[in-house]
Image 1 (cartoon, rainbow, N blue to C red):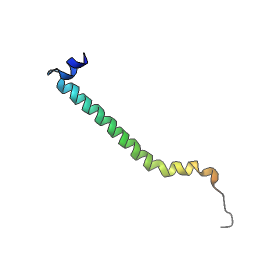
Image 2: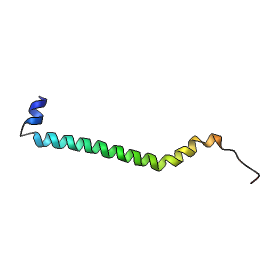
Image 3: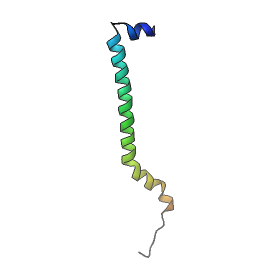
Image 4: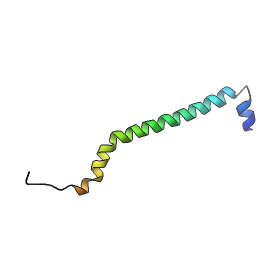
Length: 59
């Protein structure tokens, strides 16, 4: 079944085009996730280190 789908001239455009679209969308989603994590990274670091905060009332 897979051989007839991937190598059949009638379905080759859909098979290879769909594969490229799927891989491309997964790559784009991963790049966007990394960019969002970098953007929020400083904020998340502040939340994680909030317990280490010491109020210096002398200042």
